[in-house]
Length: 150
Image (tube, rainbow, N blue to C red; front, top):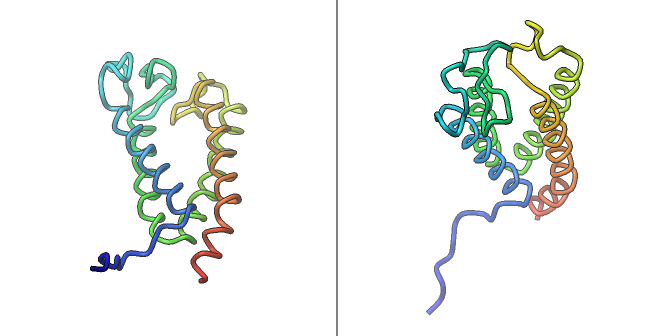
């Protein structure tokens, strides 16, 4: 007896990475709306540096910030469908996070320009995410493209 043949192509490593990050962003977006996991939940604002809510008591969040995480997560899940989409998600998403890192360092945390909002912990998390996403795109993207060409 032979094993059943799967009609689904195996996901390339770059697709798996995009899928995993998409899921993480979705979870983080949902957690940002859960009191207790998000401290000072009563001070959660739509979009303002005055939002005192912090995910895990560390990362400043707002409703807009949580919605951005949810959107990033959905984009990751959708773009993980192809190696090229996953590569673009990781590369462009990483670049956006590096821009957010520079923006966060450049704009005062008490400034009206800090509307997302972001604090120091967010700034450095954005740096790590940017480097990690770009690194994953570059490290896994070539293998995913070669595997898809076979």
